Length: 413
Ligand SMILES: *[C@@H]1O[C@H](CO)[C@@H](O)[C@H](O)[C@H]1NC(C)=O
Ligand SMILES: *[C@@H]1O[C@H](CO)[C@@H](O)[C@H](O)[C@H]1NC(C)=O
Image (cartoon, rainbow, N blue to C red; front, top):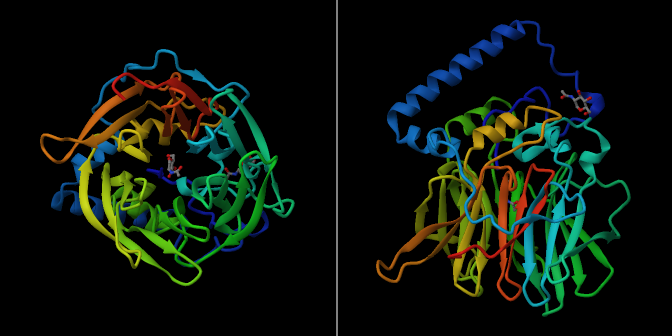
């Protein structure tokens, strides 16, 4: 998810606590005046663009401006996973074992450091850089915080999207986006079902991977990764946000070849695929839409279909049992953005989950709302995963101290 209104413009993403004040002084133009120029400039461009494209409709949709109050729908039986998990953005279900892999952080600390939301306060409290890697057992309802064996001590851990490749039915390679203060990277981890620890293998950095968000694993060292923005901070970032510019992309990474696989996306976010990876589902949250793409043998992605949604959609997850995609997202992102500015206040972000499945009649896709909440229980929902064998839907939330919510599979889902 991306910020509507980045606040920490003065800080660069790489600056540590000690380098903060070194570049603010330029005598020629008074600071306030310069800021005003930028504001007026942004406003003029915004108005121009707004007049020339179908901007307001999309913007009002993804800001959730005219949607009224959200009533809880299909939330009976939902409960927060006990134990104090917070800010668990992404959930990956390994259906054979009934284990859910997730990373959880500290909801309050995300208000200081979370580059995807342009929160770039590198002197945030230590807890901001100490996310947990969690394995949740759907059958027992218990979770364990896993040691990442081999990850150098003191390494920042600010986890985001996860991608999992099955080397065998029990041997998994896990790719985890990590927004370290020194730059965002992909951590490669390995886990064998039943083990007590997760093994850290290596860190992948690449210049094309600059604002990583989510990962679709394709092999033991290859994956697609979304960049959710072109710009990390500053006025350019504000333009990009404000104007919903389709400037982000999807990168294909492998040790042999790394390239742009798909370009010009309005904030590429969650990415997933069907079982044989012939179809790729990509959330464009500034476009309030879901791209359905086809993968070519040379690892580029081509358009198959584009499904317009009526909310700020985050991560899609694929349900092999029904060949459908569940998309979770924010109904009132503006509430979310404003909430992120208020420290010490629990954020209630209304959330919704839709199911997208093939419509036999029209040959296209149909979109059905399967669950909605006003934020009182499920706040800032970002992903949902369905375990049909155990009759459970898990819902992850990005900025809530009710990190994971466990629900019966909603009616109609
Ligand atoms: C950065 O975070 C620290 C720790 O929470 C806080 O004291 C400081 O005020 C923050 N700086 C900004 C610019 O928000
Ligand atoms: C999922 O949703 C979160 C929260 O909005 C968003 O920041 C992120 O981009 C999405 N992707 C993953 C993998 O979490």
